[in-house]
Image (tube, rainbow, N blue to C red; front, side):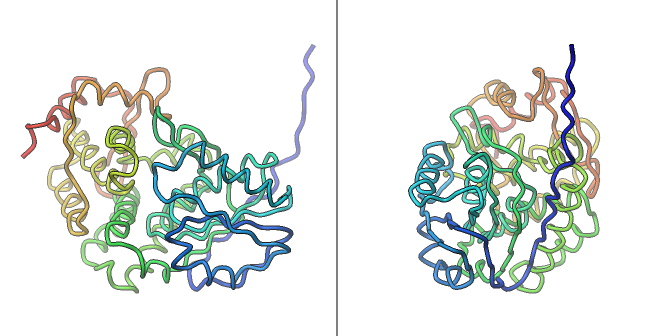
Length: 352
């Protein structure tokens, strides 16, 4: 016997990404802002003036990738229950990518799912992490291996927050902008080569162009079953680097910059990318003082760790590499010897 359950079409989850001054935000029912001490100390008063809710609470969690774990999620959930939030409540992610990922994940599981909005305060979060509904935490096996797709109700991108951003955090966000251009838009990449993102108007333009590209990809492939996987360019290598380095020692964008350089070298080895193009990408990353080199203990161990990544399937790993600037290729399960040979160049004592 087979009994079919017919479910209604998914409720409309479209949402707007607002770029500009943070507007007045009116939320139904209770709300909780999740943030960290650094962001709260700099900007919380402004946000509290802008948000209206029946009751508004603030949950402050420790700052840093090393706290992006289940223990912190439990702390957030406990505070939500303490304040008696319910299914009609809203969470507000006010911080960088770590805060956004954790708040979104908490929203996805609190009372089986409540709304949340994103107010990203770092460049990386504004151009990438806040858009698309990926939420999650790290564990000892790797990065973002526990999580859910849970789209925000709205994203508010205000470049005013970036004026207090440390230079390393700014550069980490630039890495994600470069990623989008290399994968999808050669003209955008050429514009980046000529433009100074320290200029406020250029920065706003770069954010808008990156978000438009990300929104287009998410619209086509919300749950990463196709083209959205291309956004992992550099990340397959980067997640292993973060795992080995210890979360918090390298910023995510810094690891992605190194990962893009490695992915470019793989693309050269299999005949998809030219050294000249790879040098252009590396030069742009270096302009913003992003790291492009890394020492590993063992090429074999690094390679084996790829298979703990959520992007691996049936002991097969897919690498996202550029075919040329503005174009991409998904390379599934390349010869182990090719990848390990690349990684051996990064073993201690072998890189100049």
